Image (cartoon, rainbow, N blue to C red; front, side, top):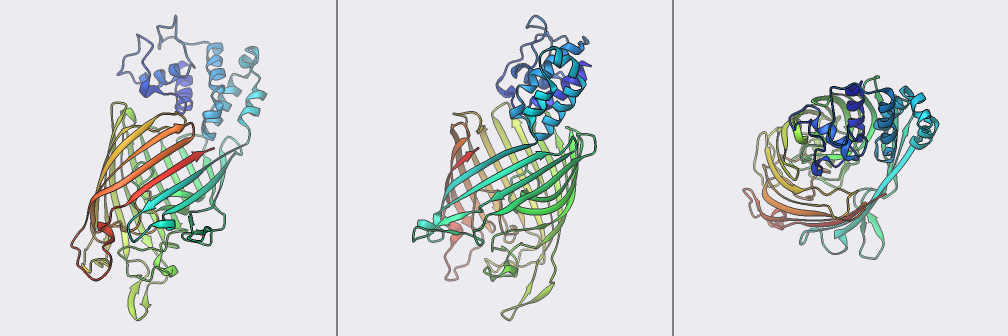
Length: 458
């Protein structure tokens, strides 16, 4: 019984524990034990105290009252749990309802505390600068988002998100949208369904920040509104994700493709469809590695634009691999490689690069946690991208504008100056445009980029 309750509560309390900085309080739990991380997390969160405050006694069976005490303490952290974790606590509370009532904790109180709907949101004010490209009032923009998440039942979670998109400050003191009509729109309309097991999850609908390569990769490619159907299996040691969907709300920008009229809809990724797969493995200390594949299609086929031969989508498919390795409690090393299968067209330099590649490396020290004031991190990255390696549109990277046909370094710092309030600054340096030929246009890639932003969560 102890192993079952321990595993369940460990998954629940991971969101609030600070095990990376906590010491093991039990002399009988070695660091190489399978339960070490879970035990430390639960002890640090106050869910377990052990025997005499010194021994865990992992081989001893616990009583139902001891299990109920653990559940009651987990309930105290309910506001920090996700909807899936709250559903898990709900199941445990049903199992130990009588014991919880005897402890003075009514299960009905748990239901009131969980609630059916939880609202969150964030606001971002940012400054982006590149000489002659994005400066003066065009450098400033903001975004406000609101999310509502409802636990429909033990298996179904519904999420709705609204966003203003990115609004730039115009020269006349008003605001204008950077890439659409500026109206508030739904960027998340999503249903998650688990099959009676936390390992399997089916997601249907719209996701706001879906990224090629998944959330643990660098996010070099598209990261924006995405309509999809996705199935995932995750047992904590490895995960397999597969799905099919369509890109939405992409910037009017398509690097390396033959649609060079950026002010037309055909110059965006909006409407491009993709089937995708992602396989990931998870290792000790939060490290992970994965390999992913995307196949792209778009209606319309070949045609002409202003008398020039074009294609709606000249990237047939893409594959990539990433590794994110945590060293100790403060260091993270990320490496990411991607290769795009194109038909050999390089718009920027006039060079023809078949199957362009991108290599990205990033080293981070520390961890900025929005819930922990005065936490911070500092990082440095390197990017080497061939002409046409970037699909275009939005990206999870802090960079903007020219993304491929370059080599460039970057550095930044994130600092949480108050709870749920963070300031970040990023700067590129030593940027070089590969095989650049002077053609009378500004060499944007060799003009360094600066970004600073405030993010507030609520």
